[in-house]
Length: 87
Image 1 (cartoon, helix red, strand yellow):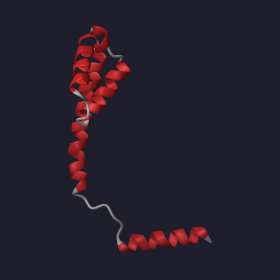
Image 2 (cartoon, one colour):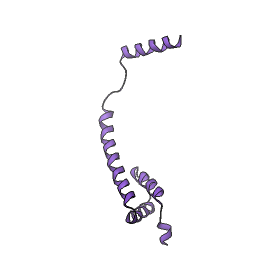
Image 3 (cartoon, one colour):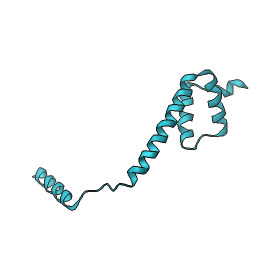
Image 4 (cartoon, one colour):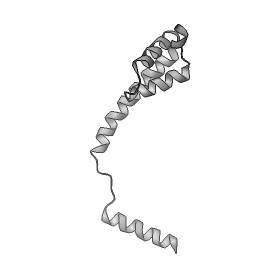
């Protein structure tokens, strides 16, 4: 029975990544937590992965509020540069 709950570190990181997006099943989460008992490296990876995801989510909210587009003058300059390079 316990053999079916054993996973490798590669499987643990895959489950961790799935968990970040809410795609991990209950069985996978149980396997992951059992793996953490033996493997502190994977536990640390999960903790760091969650911290980075939280950081990037916060940054992306700020980034979405900023408009990222070229002005008309910049578009014209880019268009002219492309036309010159094609000749």
